[in-house]
Structure formats: structure tokens, C-alpha cells
Image (cartoon, rainbow, N blue to C red; front, side):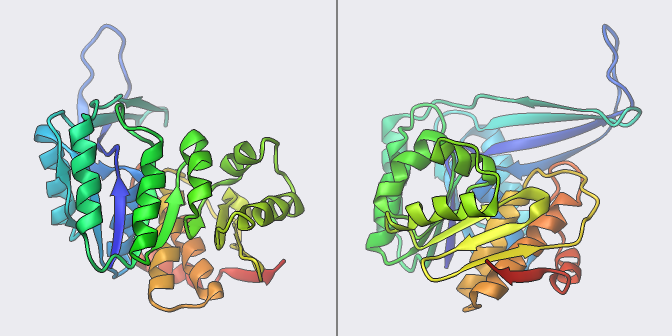
Length: 308
């Protein structure tokens, strides 16, 4: 089974209006609610593509119940740890008249030591964890060491552990050898301490990461596609130019496609192919909406794979 971890989830409220009026009442045209957070996005895409996963994480209060209910209605299995605080809410305001978008992101609750301890103990007690996907930022009260501890827990279970985070949490975790990391070009550049522009520079950094014992580095590069690096092989996946509506969730869709294909025994080419198609399909959807299976399937045959 694939398990995804989202320690800082959010209930995303997308509000569509004609135009935001200053010092006056602005009427809402319509409103959508989505369960948000990087690991949750991975689970949602896996479900959309016909796979199964279990979403783990920390949720609390009415908004936490709302978020969990949205996932259940979407067919995503959940096994959240309850916290005393209220799950954060992000508000996305879209102006129909101008196309402008405003994102108001809440800080979220502070997690008590006992709550993160309860979550960690739950992970330790789980069985049949074939894949463990660790994604996203950390909430207040949770140390950057948590991902390192979860990586060790996954390795002890013989799990394929994929880490998708940034900054200190990523740097601190590399020594604990996740199976795979999924940085974008900017995150990989921050990890390297210099701007990585060319494919050669990216691959040199990937090789340094492999020397730390990490088997796979999956690098997302926006319109330039994906690079998948292992000790033995470097390949890239690209698609013809498409109209991009929103890149929100595209990286998470890449993770979902790669993990789902890999879990089905697909080779590197087919795994990166599904990852590329899923990420691109999400980039073509508006706002925080994720990919649709039919769009992903239509893109699969257009993905070009090349060795580097």
C-alpha cells in the first residue's frame, strides 16, 4: 500500500467574484472547497488515476473534519491523527473581471509534542507500508527532525520512501537516505548552494546526492520536463508546449504518477512517462484543481523520453 504524509494540511476555499471592491460589499459568484496539502494532493491524484493510497497526517476541529470528509467523498482512504487545534484554511480569491488571483494562507495550529509523538507511534505500528511519501512544509511545534525519523521508520519497514520538501527539512534528511527525493530546479539549486541551469549542472548535483545513498532523484523543471537520475542511468521526459493555467499541485501530481507507476512494477521510462503526463495535466487545470484521468491518458503517448 502507498501511504502519504501531510503534517500541515489545509482546507482550501476558492472564492470566485466579479471584482474585489474596496470599502464595499463584494458578492461571491460561487465557492469551492478542496482538501489541500502536498501529500493529500498525491493521494487525490493516485485515486484519480485508478490507484489506492492512505492519507496520513494531522487534522483537527471542524475544518479538519470537513477536509477529511472531502477526501472520503472523493474515494481517498484516510487515517489521520486528531489534534486539539483547528486545521488551517487557505483562501484563494479569483477575480473574473481581471483574471487576478489573491492567495491568503493561514499559519495553522501549533502541534503539541504529545500529538506529533502519537502520530509517529502510529506510523511505527503500521504494517505493509510499501511506499511512504513525505511531502510538504512542517507545522509550528514540529522539528525539522521529524522527516529524518519517518525516513528511518520507513527504512526499517523496507518501504520505498519518497521525500518532497525544501530547505532545512530536506538538507537534514539526506543523511538518513530516503529512497527518492523530488526537488524542483530551484529547490535543488538551494540544496547545492548555487543556481543550477544546465542539465549537466543538475546531473552533477544528482550524482553527489547518489553518493549519500539516495537511489533516485526526480527533478521537475516546469516547461523543460523532468529528469530522473539513478547511479546507472539518467533520463528526461518532455512534452510539446501546452497552455498552462495553474502550476499549483503539478509537482505533487508528478510524485503521484511516479509512485503509482513504480508500485505497479513499471520500468523507469514508464514511471517517468506517467509522472510527466500527470504533472502536465494538472498544470492545464485552473486554480487548485488537479489532473483528470482522461487528460493524463491523452498526454501519455505525447511524452518523449531520452537518455542523458
